[in-house]
Length: 69
Image (cartoon, rainbow, N blue to C red):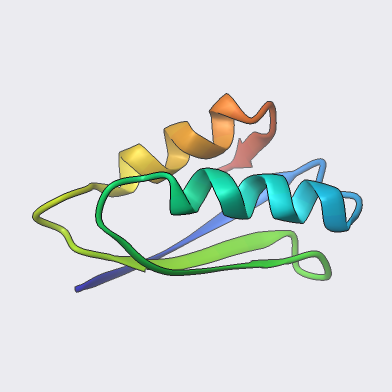
């Protein structure tokens, strides 16, 4: 199992957090996910045989948020 973390621009409220969380949970292979409004980050663990970090980055981008590098 792999773990990942993404810094996200534009998270302002619980609705944004829930939107991102739903997008992460929609990725095949996800195990756990958490979004922090305070830190503006998403952390997750996943099965590396079913998904890659790029899949999670794309899921967040598809919700309309920007990833910080």
